[in-house]
Image (tube, rainbow, N blue to C red; front, side):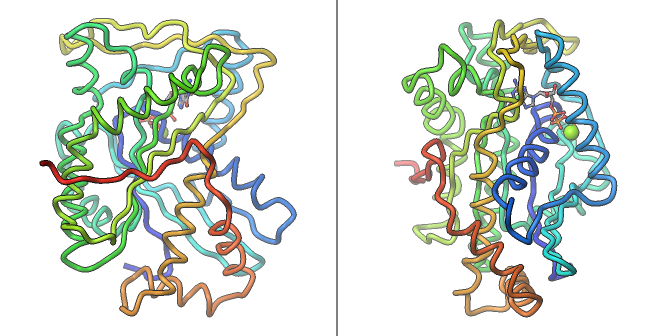
Length: 333
Ligand SMILES: Nc1nc2c(ncn2[C@@H]2O[C@H](COP(=O)(O)OP(=O)(O)OP(=O)(O)O)[C@@H](O)[C@H]2O)c(=O)[nH]1
Ligand SMILES: [Mg+2]
């Protein structure tokens, strides 16, 4: 592994909103870094993927109603989102594994590469479809929700990651990120009670065992921390219907329909919190005594340029929004 790259893994089922999340991080970074010499940019093929995502979205928003394709279980290939924090000629590559959602059902041939990447990632981001989580009125919907979110499989990946962190004494941050959550956070009917319900549903119910697994692996060590960070990657839509339908695999699948809230202007919120947590994890390496890859990366940054370090420090010092909350992890009783 090259020490001069910041490795991160994004783990979630197909169509949950991974590309939109990366595109949101870029959009909010632009705002946060405006007026400074630093900028966060997509590199290589990531640039085209992000532009396509933005164009697809603006086309949909111009239309009045908006219907994202269902979260489904298809297979796909491993790919990496390549971002770079640039200050003049100095660069910090930030590379994010786009975990093939289909592999949550069946691991593909490149699994070893993917597993290695996850092991080396000091940050795991888990995007979760909030509509799936919040609209389960029947037993069949509840079953479909847990199955489509692949909670057991995700928990197993996270447990392995935490175990490795503990054994090798490496720090880590896990970020649980509901997306498609405009109706609970910002749309006209959104209330504080709904926002809290979403948080409880994810942290205390659906992913309770995953947080307990981390606590059990970490045995009281605070090397790994977890955060709940909701993100509105669109912001100007409101859910009309969760659209549960029977799918080919004979389980329900959600095909949500959103209405576009005038004036239909994208309003990303929450993605900056992710960027701030990335910066905090990186800057925390300053205090590490070891030769971990994160520490080496921090050495590279400090040796490379004062401005690069200042850009990270600036993000590190940015306050998290009120929506972002640390998760207290407790071992099962
Ligand atoms: N309402 C709403 N829709 C979203 C949000 N995030 C993503 N979507 C929509 O969900 C669909 C899937 O988003 P993508 O970002 O392409 O998802 P992905 O996980 O990258 O999908 P694949 O690459 O196909 O696996 C798109 O139509 C997005 O516009 C969100 O926060 N709110
Ligand atoms: Mg994608």
